[in-house]
Every structure is written in structure tokens, then in C-alpha cells.
Image (tube, rainbow, N blue to C red; front, side, top):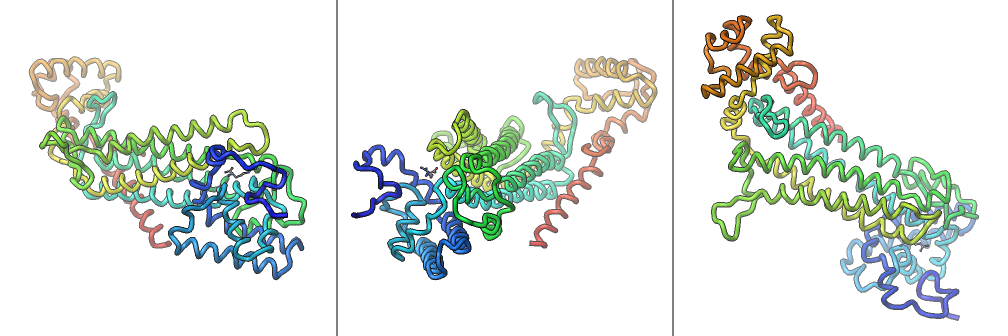
Length: 467
Ligand code: ARG
């Protein structure tokens, strides 16, 4: 009797329908798990050997065979093309049996593709998370460099997209630095929960062979083993967490992109983007469009979509494994690929932009951004804040009517509103003083900002050295 071509054909008398086979096939995307699945298979083989299921010779044959597959895939670019395999797991097993013969048929003892796929996916993702975290770090580095290149640059800070109070450009850069610091923490936590071994859960009930799961986990560098086989084969929380972490990275990238798109417009003229990350118009010769940033902003939506897709797939799934779970891969792969490229492009944009310091300084001193300063000044002279706020509002109204900024008013003009204003008001209204007074932790005073910037830069450098 001949054995069936696929892994499960024994109880079947008819061949699968071609359209269904194509529908069911995951090899076209899960081949990305090839190396991870081979590594996990080697560890499983060791587990089987120590459990007494495989002889030393069989185990050696299987391991050498698996290593050979790895090498072949490495140098043969067509290794995966024109392959008729249901998924990466059946592909590896078929190739192994082809290569080493019957010993290869023993590898699947005591495991199921259900614990196998969860294991390979976790292994693969574990590395991907490290990669993405490094790329987030590069964006952080580019932010500190942009801040450091133009330490004295100021920006009008906005609320409601209305000029509010002046801030340092470096303060803007470090705001995004903070967001990405939280993203890296989230990635770390996701890594921790991803780094648990499901292998040994078999199809759903656990394995009936005496495999030392903890030893297998150690061999693969997993922190521990999953505690419940039903949960282990159907848990994709780590995928949701990962894509969720990616979604927040994209929120941060796209907010940053939006700020920069605005700042680069003729209306603002705060920054100049490099030609290297802009495109022209096929019709309007004068155009220089911030496509790099717009694409980053645009791609955020697709990653949020993957998160919704995953949650929806998981919701209401009965225990344990269901084929629905095969849908996890493309969502995670696509999120990872797109977050990676967006992070790379964002770093390039940041490395190549320049703040138009004169323009931003002018903008930061026009539009009554020091009105709060005037109210605070009165508070220091003993006026209750609410009264000071009201008086300042009236002075602003007056200043608007005579077409002057607050610091352009004469002392006389101001004293008509209150005798609390004296000659030292001009010092208080200056841009320098406005910035310097925000000197508590988290404020935009140069003292505070440079402290944070220097700390961030030292931290990045130190990390670099210790690598
Ligand atoms: N390709 C499948 C997946 O990605 C592998 C697991 C298949 N298991 C099964 N019992 N059909 O989920």
C-alpha cells in the first residue's frame, strides 16, 4: 500500500478538490517560518531521543537531515518555488523523508502541527520583535540627533492647532522620543510573553511520550513552557499584543508624520524636507510633496486593520485549535513588514530635515504666545491668577486693536490696565524668559530639555558600546 502524499491522507479515499486545496494552502506565506520550524524540529528530535523514542542513530540522521534542508534553503533561491505542499510543516517533513528516508517519518512522533505551528510562530516572532525594537531605537536616535543639530531652535507649541506657547524644537523631538520609549517597553513585554514554549501540548491534550518539555524549552531559549495544552495550541494573544504594539508605533509615527507634513507646508515653512524623501508632481512643476511621511501616515490604518482582524478571528473560537487560526500569519507578517519599513523611512526623514530657525522663531514670538507669561508675571506681583488672566485678556484685546505684540506695547499702555505692571515686565515677556521659566521636570526650559537630551544621547551611546 502506498502512503498518501499529504500528512493526513490515511482515512481519505478521495483527493481534495483543487480549489479547496488552494484555499487551504498556507505554504505561500508560512514558508517564512521555515528556519524557525526546522530549529524547533531539531529540539523536538532531541526531546524524542531523550524520551527513548528515537535511537541515537535515528536522531542524528534526522538532525543532520534538517540541517541540510536549512543550508539548501539558504543557497537555493528556488527552493520554495513550484512546491506542492499544504504548509511549511508538511513541506519540511516531506523534504526530510525524501532526503533521509524512513527515519524522517519518526520526527512527528508526539507532536501535532498545532503545537508545532505555535512554537515556530513564537520563535519567529521573538526575533522579529528584537529587530523592530532596534529600528524604533534608530528613530529615537535620529530624533536626538535632529534635536542636537539645532539645539537653539524654537517652535510655536500648539493646542487646537492654535499657537499656544513657545517650546524648544528639541522638546518636540523628545516628545516623540518618549512615545517610542513606551513602544520599546511594550515590545519587551510582548517578547516576554511570546517567549514560552507550546511544544509538547501536541494536538490539544498534551503528548503521551516522556518528553522533557523544559529541556526542549531551554534548548530553544524559551523562558518556560506553557501550562495548559488546550490553551497553548489555541492561544494567539502574543499575536494580538504584537500587532497592538505595532499599532501604537504607527500611531506615534503617523502623528509625527502629520506634524512634519504641516511644518513643511508653505503655510508654515518651519522645516525643509530633503529631496531624497520627497516627490514631484507630474503636472505642477513647483511641487515638492512629502510622500514618505504621507505613506507612513497612510499605512497606520492597515496595521490597525490587522489588529481588528486578529481580534475578530479569535473572538468566539471554541477550544482548542481551529483552522481559523491560520489567518494569524498574514496579519502578523504584514504588520511586521510595514512597521519595519515605516521605521526605516522615518529615521531617514529625520536625519535629513532642517528646521528653518528664523521662521520658527518669528512664529514663536507672534500671536501672543507670551500672554500666559504676562498673567504669571502679575501673579508674582500678588494678583490672583483669575484676575490676572482676565486683565491679560483685556490687554491682548487692546494689543490686537493697535496691531502690536504684548512686548511691543509701552509700559504706559500696559499700566492703563493695572498698576501692578512695572518695567521688569519686558524681561518676563521675552522669548528667553518664557522658555526658561518652564523649569520643572518635563518643562521646555533649555536647562531641562538639554538635561533630557544629553541623558538620552548618553544612554544610546552606552547601549551602542555594550553591544
Ligand atoms: N497551517 C496551519 C496553521 O497555520 C498549521 C496547523 C494545522 N493544523 C491542523 N490541525 N490543521 O495554523
